[in-house]
Length: 342
Image (tube, rainbow, N blue to C red; front, side):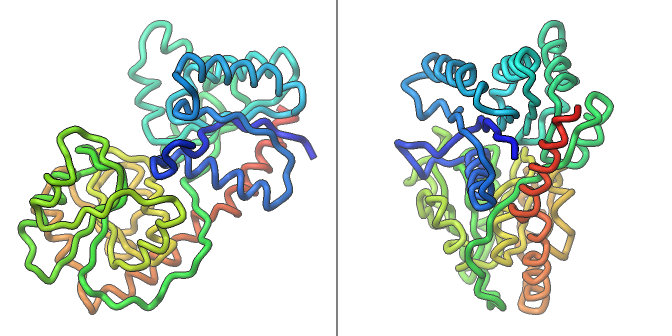
């Protein structure tokens, strides 16, 4: 069994509640590989766990050069740092006979590539064509990148369901947002719609405030409750207390919180972005609205009632099977191992 060197972002040591989707995905992969007793080494690429960015990159490159001698495969898992780190991974792989893979988190990879010019375009082309195996989060991205790299595969946002939800759950008009508190997550739309609903509706907001325009005091001027940030281990138990997830984002890939909501049997209200269209089944697992459309957001909230909620909750619970971490990790290992013959 070949040993892998996994490079990706670990949990923020100083602030464990400051955990983005890439961190959760990478940590979940490590848990699954440990469970399967698959041999691997790890390099933490989360710059928040280093003194500063310069020291972070120097440390990452030094560890990469040292540890690559102990493995057969190098696998980089990244949202943005892949542009800087992938060339080193590829070159070391070519020089020392290692196979390589890149798991690109998020949904902007194709736009990044097609909009690039000059040397940046050439660098991206080098990365996507010379990495042995490419994993992307959305199916439409896989279709686009297959022309550049035939060894491109779907590796969606996945989660581990470590508790079972309390189903069937009574519909009591309890809505929840979980994520970074910033404008692009649709916070303004949630705040405005809260003013248009009667007192029978509850909207609670969880997450770290990441935008200077928001403060705890500002948020609480609206008909919502700001509950602060959640630790990763608190997400499922918290979701289990609510009915529907609100995520009216302006940009997303496959949001992890949607997968976690499905795991707990929560349907979702989100927006008509390409990635979300792939994972939300209209009026089965959720409702999609146009970006920045408060009227449509209100209509989506009012759509849910005691008559349709149970079937949508059950559909959301079943939908989680597609994003089961164990299933997708087994496919990842199989495809990485096949890289030995590339």
